[in-house]
Length: 256
Image 1: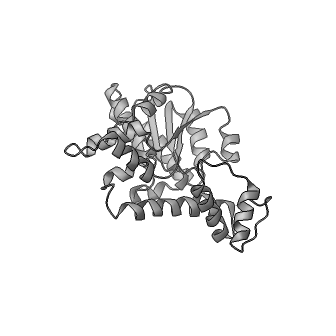
Image 2: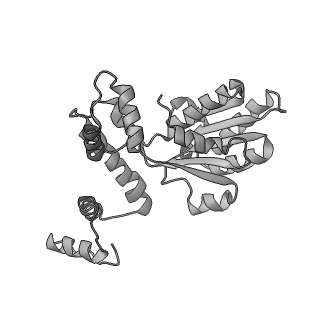
Image 3: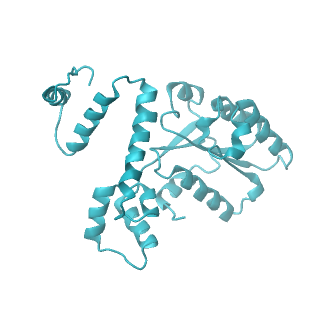
């Protein structure tokens, strides 16, 4: 794994601090990898691996713990089997899959000596209910896609035998974006566009349409495509409305 040093340094500021560390970011931006890199960082600092509890809730092995009572029972039993005079480091990846996870996190802070790190979908984390439950007890670390400097690092690591000049790499960065996953395949391959399209559709469907119960998805897509086509330009709700009218679709500026 390639280290994203800037985010590790941010997280390092809060190691052993009495707040829950919530790692958020858009889909496929690298949240899970950051959590794994942090686990490696703790081991390098001399933390016994037995005191680092890492659970990935996308794994079938964690399905029995997709219930808040089961997860709480598992974690507290694990803690009771070891020396309770030492701190545990609890890392929970894709925590939103556990129903009632907020109560588990709030209770663990009280019941055992632990340092908690969680990741999850933006559409689920930091809702009004969660903010109310964990108010004043969490800090959000937001993960973004790769910066251009990080893009150069990833490219150099993946293409040691054929590194393009910076102008070509910047053109690739503008065309393909900075999602880390694009470096797992050939940027020039035909597989890249379907990969990016699938991520776009996942974000649109799961994080926007489902959560906000949007009925007219086709009109939303047209609005989004208009915004994407006009990046860098000044626009207004009225301009979008006028554009849709030109395509024989009506949407009021208030709705936009």
